[in-house]
Length: 139
Image (cartoon, rainbow, N blue to C red; front, side, top):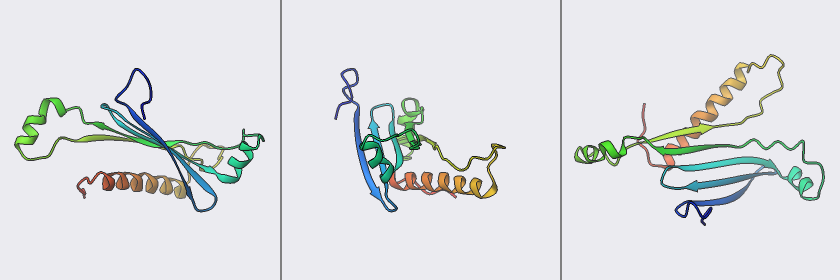
């Protein structure tokens, strides 16, 4: 589906997936010549039902997360050299962003358990992205 008159080669889509524990994942993705972007957020189904019935939505946390995959910038300069060496078609850069509600500590510091959870989430997400893109595994 086209996202506008000024960018006819942009393709975007909106998906939703219901997961366990009464959660809904809303996801939007967009692909154009400069990047691929995926943004998603979990939404509590009971809270969503309350919002749809016209009740107060101010307490519903919408914390979007996502990632962008961009060309590495060397594509035009080194593409012939990369192909000549049999190294494929260049690389990509990935940017991952999360908004996570961990606690309401007054100090503003994460405890070790929260810190480990965030690190595991980032590592797992990057691993899943690399697997989906058939990237070679690195040590």
